[in-house]
Amino acid sequence: MSKEILIIDDDESVAWVIEKTLSTVGYKIETESTIKSGLSRLNGKSKLVILDLILPDGHGIDALKKIRKEHPEVSVIVISAHGRMESTIEAMKQGAYDYLDKPFDIEELKIVVNKAYDDLLIRRELKELKALHPDSDPLQMIGRSKKMQKVFKEIGKVANKDITVLITGQSGTGKELVSRAIHHNSYRKDFPFIAINSASIPGNLLESELFGWKKGAFSGAMESRKGSIAAAEGGTLFLDEIGELDLNLQAKLLRFMQDMEYTPLGSNEVVKANIRIIGATNKNLKNACKKEQFREDLYYRFNVVEIKLPPLKDRSEDILPLCEHIITISSKKYNTAYKELSEDAKSFLMSYAWPGNVRELENTLKRALILSDGSIIDKKDLMVSDPSIYSIQDFLEEKLNKYLSQLSKLENGNLYENIITEVEKALINIIMKEAKGNQLKASKILGINRNTLRAKISQYKINI
Image (cartoon, rainbow, N blue to C red; front, side, top):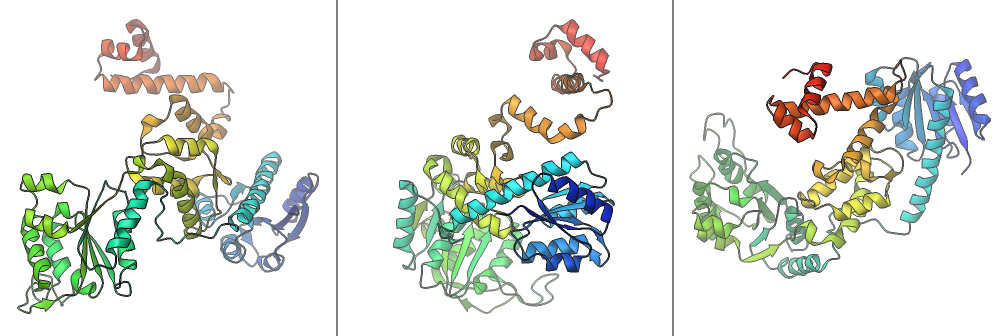
C-alpha cells in the first residue's frame, strides 16, 4: 500500500510544515485547502487524511462524517487551533483516528501518523483474511462444545412442535437467543416474536402489558391498547424471568395458558389467542414451588420441555469462537475496524470465570472494540467488572499508561517521587477509612510500624 497522505488545511504554513516533516520519512503528500477539493482527491489511493476543523467551505466534522461514510477504509487525523473538549469528543465519536491541537509537536505528529499507517496495513491484512471466512448470521448461536451441541439438537426437536418450552440457565447465558432460534425454526417464523422481561415491569403493570386494556379501564387509560399477547398473534410470546411473577398474575397466566383465552382490562369481551409461549428463568422453580413462591400447576404447564443452558465457564472451548463472532458483528454495528485479540487477551478470556456469562463477554468485547487504540485488543483493554483478576502491577500499569503524558509534564521533573508519594498517600487514606481511624488496626493491615504510620499521617495531613 502506497504511503500517501492527503492534507486538507487552508493554513499554508501548517501544510508546508507537515509536508516537509512527513516527506522526509517516506510519505507522499497531497494538499488541498477546501473540503470540496479535498474530498475530490479521495479516489481510493489516499488512505490517510490530516483534516483541519475550520475550513473556508465548511466544518471539518461534516467532512469527517462524509469520509467515514463514503470511504470507511480511510483513517482521519483531525487537527485544530481551536481545541475544545466538545470538538475532541465529537471528532473521536465520528470515527477520527486521533486529534491533535495546533501548534502540535512535530515528533508527536510523526508518531501518530506512523501508528495510523501501521494500523492501516494491519486492517488491510485482516480484511483479506476475513474475506476467506463468510460472515456469521447475527442470530446464529455459537458453540462447538458437546453441551451446546445438545442444546442445538433440542432446539431442532421442539421448534416445529407447537408445545410450551421452559428455558433455564444463569443470567446472561442466552435464553432469549434460544427462544428466538426456536421461533425462527418453527412454522410461526413469519409471525411476530414478542419478548417480555417479567422482572423489568412492575407487577401491577405487567398484567395490563400482557392482556391490554380498554379505554377508561383505569385512570390515565385515555384510549384502548393491545397487549403483548395480541401483538404476538400467530407467533411466539417469550416470557423471561417468569420466576419473578407475583402469585396473583401467575393464576391469571395459568388460566390463559389452559384455555388460550383472555379478557383485556376494563372489558367484558373474551378474546381467543393463537400464540406459542416460551418461558425462561434463572431460578430453581422446583424450590420456588416448595417455598410457595411459584405455583406448582403453572410450573408444570410451562415445563412441557425444558432446555437447560450451561454457564460459559462450563463450555470454555466456545469462548474464542464467540469472541470472533461478537467482534465481527459489533465492528459492523458500530462502524469500527475489525480488531484481532492478542495472545495475552486470548489467555485472559479463556481463564476468566465469566460470572455474567455470554452477556458479560459480549459487553466486555464491545467496550474494548470501541475504546481500544490500534488494530489489536490487548489484555489491558478487557477491563471486566471483577477487579480481583488483575494483579496490582496490571492495575497500576494500566492507570500510569493512561496518564503518563500528563505526569511527565511535572515542572520539577521528579516523576518517580511524585508517583510514589501519591500512591502511598492514597493507600494510607483508604486503609485508615477501612479501619475507621484505628491506627493500630491500619498498621497491621499495611504491615508497617504504628509510629511509621503516625508519621505518614502527619506528613500527608490525612484526616482521621
